Amino acid sequence: MKILIVGLGSMGKRRIRCLHRLGITTVIGYDPRPDRRAEVEATYKIECLDDWEKASAVDVGAWIISTPPDTHVDYALQAVDRGIPFFTEANVTDPRMPELIRRLDETGLVGVPSCTMVHFAGVRELRRLIGEGAIGRPLAFTYQSGQYLPDWHPWESYKDFYVSKRETGACREIVPFELIWLVDLFGPVNAVSCMKGKLGDLDCDIDDVYQLLLRFGTGMIGHLMIDVVARPAVRLIRINGTEGTLEWDHTANTVRLFRAEAGAWSVIDLGAGTVEDGYIHPEEPYIREMDDFLAAIRRERPWPHGFRDDEAVLDLLVRAEDSDRKGLPC
Image (cartoon, rainbow, N blue to C red; front, side, top):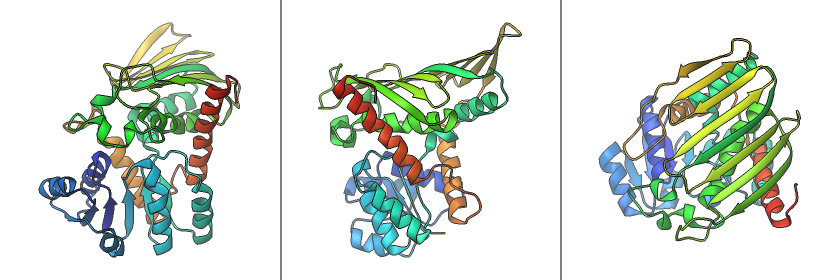
């Protein structure tokens, strides 16, 4: 299979590495920036193009769209026009999402949004333990996911890419990124309340902290804090259940389980995985995600999170921002 990577920034390069690990060696890159093309050609030994008309005309089996979030639907609709299966990175709200969903329904084409977090080892372990009833019925959780924005891409200024823009700001992007796996694990959210703001000293016009309270359809309550001010980086969740407690600390690469009946903690070591220089997250979840995408193209197994699911999660982001503006739950 030949695959076109649209966008050769941080995620585009990661997707190339994932495909190479999966044995897909015929990869073509597209990016208008000469520095990115030069780096990718030197590092990954693939052909790179600077002309979109030429790149989009190449006969390939799929597109991987790793561009800024506000351009994903543009490229996705072009892929549908050409009948090319595609994958997009994490999305933010776009008024054309219903059109994309309608076109995919009409054509039956495989087009999917990223759901990377469901492939993380910690999330998979939480799902297993909760499914086995290890803590009884989940009741409530508190979760923080944060990383100081200048540390996201230490090789470039955060002011030089999309995370510093209000519509595609770093926090605004990560809220649905995390909600995808939380909703997948705990079910639909019935009500959300939010407070957000620019609290730190970042030199850009974005909200750097989002605090959400979530009430799920089961009655479960969750607190989600997304920030780009945390030093050091943190991803830590604590889930209370009727029969115990679960904690996932991504930094420590552990899941801790407290069983009330035993009155003791047990620790599951997840391992650090393979972490590329300049990145903080391991490669393995992204490799699993690309493997699932290739399997979806081959119709071997269904994709776990479609654009209709994505639209529901992105609606939660809109409701959260409405809540902050109105000072009321939505």
